[in-house]
Amino acid sequence: MTELASSKRREYRNIHAFRDLPTYRLPAPGWVSILHRISGVVMFLLLPFIIWLFDTSVSSEISFARFRAAFESGLGFVPGWFIKLVALALIWSYLHHFIAGVRHVWMDTHHAAVTKQRGGMSAKVTLVLALVLTVVLGAKLFGLY
Image (cartoon, rainbow, N blue to C red):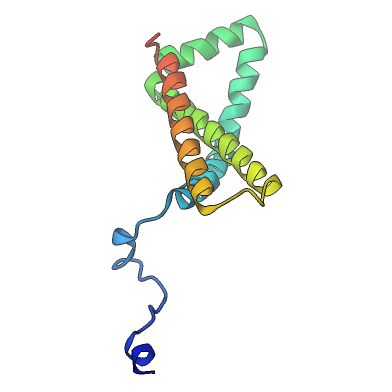
């Protein structure tokens, strides 16, 4: 009985934001979950930009030329590289949100096959795949190939 009394169980309390969060190590599934929410917010906030992109790219040949010029030389006071960075953020948010959504659907439909190890591995695959595809499409966007 003295062994049980002497060994203390770990206590879980509220996390102090400034003291505990800088040292807290979030696992990969946690990062995927948080980034899934962030990517959804980014896509929602960039919805006017998406509508403008679609409208100017398909309206006419003149508007498509203006669309291409916006990416090359800018649009008014906004430089072209900034428009490309916003488009790159949109590319990342779409890719991450889509891949993480497919991961969540897979986990929901195969709930008996999901383990802690498979969940961690699928989260790492999600993070790496979204990042690699973003780098490839970003290289195309910035004219590297």
